Image (cartoon, rainbow, N blue to C red; front, side, top):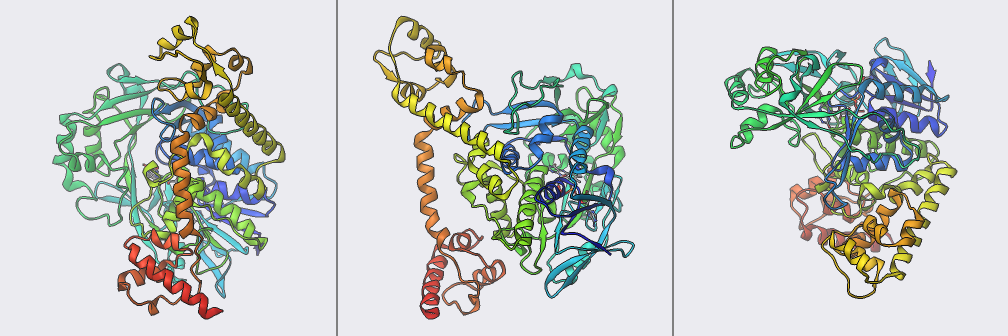
Length: 623
Ligand SMILES: Cc1cc2nc3c(=O)[nH]c(=O)nc-3n(C[C@H](O)[C@H](O)[C@H](O)COP(=O)(O)OP(=O)(O)OC[C@H]3O[C@@H](n4cnc5c(N)ncnc54)[C@H](O)[C@@H]3O)c2cc1C
């Protein structure tokens, strides 16, 4: 019999963050996975970040997680997307070296003295009196711990499809995990089925890159981690090609060989990441779709064909790929496939990510119905932090929606009935001007520090940074710039001009004027020599002051509903004047606050008023 404080099942992105957090916080931790050679594998595109997801990576970093550090250490390309747009939608994206990323994370894990790795298939949960006790593996070996974190990704009872054929795999080359999902069902959990897909990997030596548009990285890149001293590495380009009339013709002619279209796959796929056959059928008016060819690593010819995921048969895949400009003679190294897997709808969890039914049992990542490395890693970290709080009998962390994309993600998962893979998008947050990738440290470092994952030194550095930002804002509000020929000559390059002394902050608020322009004009700003991470904050806080204030007011307003707690023992069946459907939903999700109740799909403002009266009368009765 093996005994631990915490057992994490699955060494994907959720599992690695969870296991690192638990072991760093002092728990004797076991990280069990189907194949230890696949730790931190990116089974789809080896790319981290992009819209909304870059915020999640920065939030993970601010809380003391590892994804940002690992990405900065292993990138092949860094690019700021939407750099000419507002700060709420700017998004850092990295193309990672897949194998290097995996080696880096494995090394971090193996450097943890409290952490043991084990290759096995956990196939049954051991639960007594609604408290998790441990797990059994496929050989019947028993592992005991008061906390188990399930991060099983796309593996549970999984099947991958290539055309009308299927294999019992969770990811190409890795067996499907049998047993755990039936064991969850036996415990009374509701289990659903989802699907996702990945494109083919092709050989760079058989591609004519001259027929494509080169997509270089940024010359002066930003990084994910807020820690200093990130390595400057050589960057590698990606390439852009497009589908042609021929591609669309091949797809349409072979739809009957698609397991999706012939009804063999029952799981629902991600609407925001459709297969190429979905794109061609759903957006039939679009004569062509962008396809990116991206490197998988520095020491391999394997290239990823982004935007071309499909479940059509291997022979059709060849025809489709060879219809793309530059890929006329392409050789497929790995075929595209779709994967269908079991997941556990997350309305069965509380905001801490612990299940409501079984104490000590946490779930994070794709098992909760999400899709994406960043979504998984962020949940894994939160589950890890809360697992330790649970062990220590301390209050677990609930991140409010206005604090982070992670808070928004978890609130959506535990509140809404999600029946398709959930991907983080900027549009999911009503507070996106507050939840920017540039200020994740301001929002979350204190929580990371309080939970023990951020060191005192890092916290002090963070406080010093905030102080410098505040001082610089104050200086901008006080110091003026006077009109002169030199000043107006410079300003004319940005279509601006001044005819009276202006506070630096006033000038910064004008269109086209950035902190860097002010630096050109003002000697004091030059002398200070602030770094980009600091002056970007000064710029955003001054330029967008009005919008930010409005959003804070919005937070304060919704805070009122968020503060009204719904009694745990409320009997929804006794509430009159609401529909049966609403009553059932409330009883199933059991929202913690009136705010959460208001976000449940189908719950109307009138229902909230009824609930409010019910809470008041409940209070009077209890008194
Ligand atoms: C084919 C495919 C296509 C994808 N396409 C996209 C995409 O287009 N966009 C996107 O954002 N994301 C995509 N993803 C999803 C992305 O890979 C996942 O969201 C992310 O990796 C999930 O992380 P995770 O930690 O939850 O699970 P995973 O990274 O899947 O890791 C799960 C881990 O659990 C282990 N495991 C499972 N069951 C057991 C068990 N019983 N016992 C022991 N170990 C177990 C596995 O070995 C694995 O290490 C795709 C995934 C796949 C497989």
